Image (cartoon, rainbow, N blue to C red; front, side, top):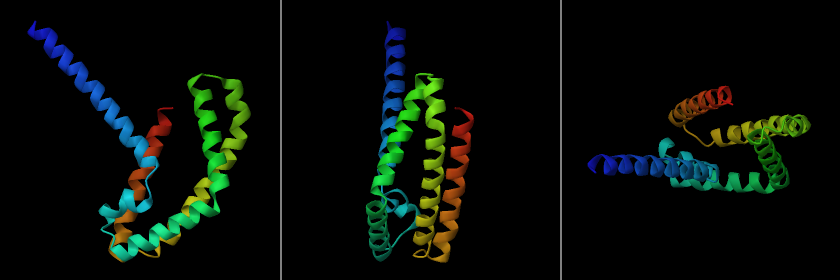
Length: 143
């Protein structure tokens, strides 16, 4: 009897952990720069305001492209999960082109944000970017 309760408790804990982790990951995708990194970079109120304004301007200027990119990425993800190689092959040129453009835009945007950071914050930001890049490479190896 105790063994069954213990097994049930472990299973419930694992499920809860999985759900919370998935929610946190999803929430991070919808966070602004200052929400995601503000505390880590110890941004001042003035820096936060300026960066939030930069984010809003970026989102407004590139909203159509970002929406199109997200749609293409979702279609690619669905095709990959369904193991639909024909659809993946058809989407790949568009996806690769949009991904390259998105990375270029994001790099430029982050470059503008860096102009607001102090030297100490830039050092921390470079660490964050290196960690992010390492996670992306690791994730790419598992796909």
